[in-house]
Length: 256
Image (cartoon, rainbow, N blue to C red; front, side, top):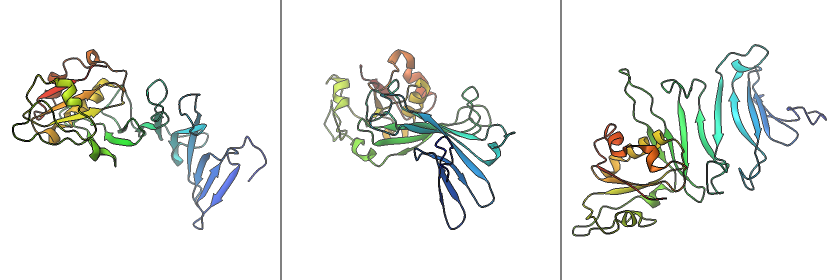
């Protein structure tokens, strides 16, 4: 404890096992130290007005392990955390939510290194999915990403159309497939909706390909209303998706 409000170790809480949690004068976490003196440090970044309405004034944007501390820290010892902002999320409920977590080896210029977790949300701010971006196989080909649904994902699962029913598929939340096809196409396979927040066109292509096991030869309806990415940014969607999976046979992109 100290009376110096500029000291990042202003408050402290210690457990019986002698692990101590440190906080600054505004009660935001700054360090965790164990009984052997090994420390994790948290980098706090101020939240700009409008980027997290009603949220905290600071976000933890970096977590650095013990090897990255001191006057001569080892390189590449931090995990980095990004958040959705007013510039990257149209819905205020999503601003301030975690957008990505990357490990200490991740390099955007060398995607074969490290790991990246990408977070997607519903319009109300509830978690939609977490995707671990795929790395590369031994032959240099891209590996598939792995995705885990959030607890509300079941509400958006589509049903297979019943025999003799065409032109629409029940998708649980809305009839975006019916809007997309506008009654001009008879639906004979499963279509699955996807509404992503990411502004990375490559991640959108990967997310479409990941729908393969769900649609099993059917299609995906892509809603780009919550991202800055346009249909033109995606290029030839079907050609790119077909290079990743044979199980998605059609992609319908909703107009913004």
